[in-house]
Length: 204
Image (tube, rainbow, N blue to C red; front, side, top):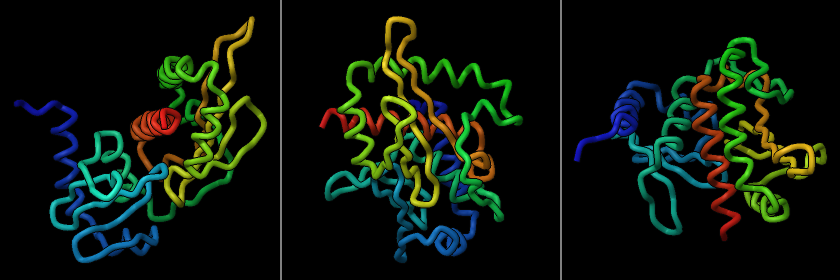
C-alpha cells in the first residue's frame, strides 16, 4: 500500500526529531522519560516519543498505538520548534487576530463552523467532556472552558448554541504568543485533535 502524503510528512518529521537535543526538551518542559522514551501529556492522554526512532505513540488503556497525523505533528512541532524564549502572555485571542496570519482567518472560521453543528443541542455533554480533560469553566459562552492542550500550554474553547437568529458557533482562543510555541499550520492540527477528543469523551 502506498503511503499518503500525510504519512510521508509524519515519517519525515519522525526522522527530523532525532536531530534535536532530547535532554533539552526533557528539561525545558519537565517531561518524564526513560532510556527508550520521552513521555508527554497532550489533551488528556499520555503519549511517548521513541528516543531511537522518533515514532510517537498514544496510550490506549494499558497499551500504546501509533499516534495519528494531528497528534504526532503537534507534539513534534512543540518539542522541536518552540522558540527558546517562548513565554505565555496570558491573553487569549482568536488565531485570526494575529497579524502574522490575518489572511488565513476565513479558513479557520470555516473549519470551526463546520464542527459547531456536531455540538448543537449537546451543551451539557460537551461541558462534561471538557471537564474530563481538566477544563476550567468560564461563563462567556454556553460552553466556555480553558483546557490544557499540553500541561504547559492552555487553550480556551467557547461554544454558543444556535438560536432563532444565529447558527451554532464554536471558537478556539489561543495565547497571544502561540506562534512562539508552534507554527500557524499546527494550530489547525491541534484544534482538530481537541475537537475530536471532546467528541470522543462525549460518546463515553
